Length: 400
Image (cartoon, rainbow, N blue to C red):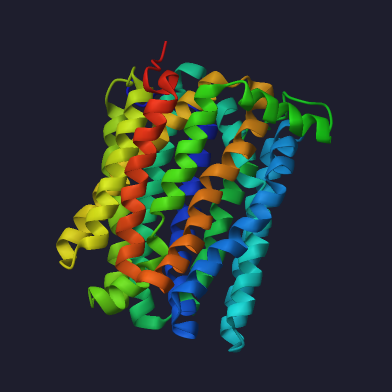
């Protein structure tokens, strides 16, 4: 069956709820960076936003993985989604009261980061309990497609609403959107108890680290993901492209934010309909290299349509890489370690782009916005070539 994972009612609930919630989150992303840009006008200030988001995640990620393997994964997701909703509610309240400052934005970003440390491990571990193993690649492709559709609709709607009414209505929509996934989680028939450890301890966290250290293919995918997103993470600089370089304003900013996920939607839909790729290791390396090439083109482009095409191409390449990486990791990880594997992976796939925002902001401050972007893309290509040369088992990996 082409969409075999959709036979699971609980997976359909999770997919629909997350699509709504993620649309609101992507609308909020446009509003936050634009509001911070207007408050500071500094690329370094935008880069610092990533630092405040990622620090709690790096500090708490291992604990989030242990919790996902020790506690009810559905209830843990309800708690984490509620925490992120409260952070968005804080942004709404501060903006409505007219007291919002960069410090308040940074503080609420950190609060959202605390909740985010527990959400991906619980979600990834929960997802594998909702569909059979043979439907997992299809479920991951559909989930990635829904994620990217939300990332297209969210910024496009956010940019239009930003130009029309400002940031406050966007924050309200984001708060309400979290209710969709929370309601979906309550409506699930499968209550998703843990199949892993019986308690939470430092030893349990170390067990996850030991497993990944002993799995060179999984470790190499995580490292490649980290370096690609750290070096080529440039979306936080889009307000400068929209306002100063491409001169398309806040509405154009929403379109720029939507271009990358639009390419990702096309790639994700194609992956969900095509037969599973067997030579997944080679596909990962090629996709990461193409992602870097597309970022180089975007960084050098002064023509708005070409900039949109480059961002769309980077989104397509990133989706192919992401689906392949997630499939490899989930199929090679025992169920009792899924939460902890995901928590370590989260330190890479969230830490990379968030720390990359800081790096991009610093380089942009020192050498200019364009150089920050295209040089990062070039280094991303080199990282993919280095991974292929240093870890031949990744390059030759085939799905059994």
